[in-house]
Amino acid sequence: ARMNVQVKHGDLDLLIEDPGGVRYAVEIKSYQGIRLQRGTFRNKEELRYRDGRAFSRDPVEQVLRAAEELDARPLIWLPEARSAKVLRMKCGVQVVQGNGKNLMKVVGARSRWF
Image (cartoon, rainbow, N blue to C red; front, side, top):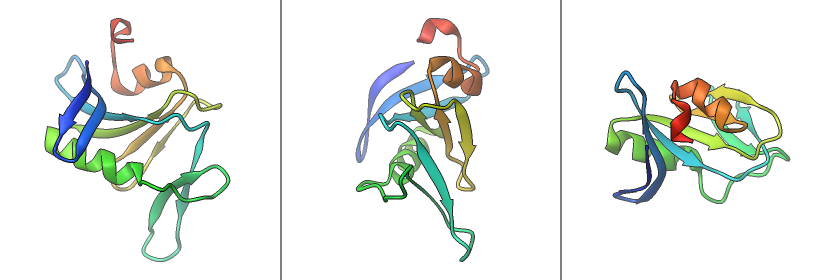
């Protein structure tokens, strides 16, 4: 695992490679939780704060750019979220809520990484 990986438009918080060689571009956010809002028009999806407010900077676009540049799967991790669950967006982004054990399940990581 590598932390603070430089990419064209800033940096990525964490880059993980699983034992099979699959890479994950991980953007870490300190949100207590989020919600996935799906619109009725064209099946648009977007992440929002739990109270429905929009983010000032879209974490989905941020992690998608980094993942594409690094040939990795995009993942947003919310280690401070109150509930442990995984959201899968149509654009390919996975949102992992909960502690490091929940993240490890999703990426097949070894405990020594955390």
